[in-house]
Image (spheres, rainbow, N blue to C red):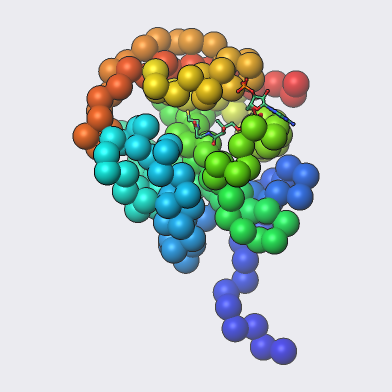
Length: 183
Ligand SMILES: CC(C)(COP(=O)(O)OP(=O)(O)OC[C@H]1O[C@@H](n2cnc3c(N)ncnc32)[C@H](O)[C@@H]1OP(=O)(O)O)[C@@H](O)C(=O)NCCC(=O)NCCS
């Protein structure tokens, strides 16, 4: 039979039945649908009303200063039925060489609190180590108590606090980082 759709990108890594693949423009409609299911997360960071389209920008286009799309890895977490249930965004060598920046790790609400985030972080760590990364950095909002607990438990330590504005919301962010090692 002739193939009628573009071949799917290969999995970058896996966590149990979940596969993580690089996202592209073609995925925009389902990234938006994921944003619709994660309005809590968007509102916490960007304020009200939350825009599900922000999830597309977070994963496909938004970049920190001085970086290019070649440094950006917007990834989708797909379940065994090929449903997009979460997303990860990492930036290579930011802010320093061999230090990667985790801009986003989000799961739709029904997938949270079952250990999936921890398993994905472990699989991501292995993937980063294969790319010669030494540290992983992130920023977590002061309003995100469960997120802060998750990162502390995962071995991230505070670096500094910064006040930052996203959308129409200004929040204090805890910048944290972890040395990458097989745990
Ligand atoms: C942060 C996030 C990625 C963590 O992923 P997760 O899969 O929910 O994380 P885990 O399941 O490993 O841990 C979360 C909690 O579930 C608990 N848990 C883990 N496995 C469990 C299980 N089988 N049964 C019951 N509870 C469980 C953990 O102990 C932890 O408890 P805590 O709230 O007291 O810390 C996810 O919750 C999420 O997408 N949140 C919204 C977006 C967000 O805040 N992202 C981070 C921005 S910086």
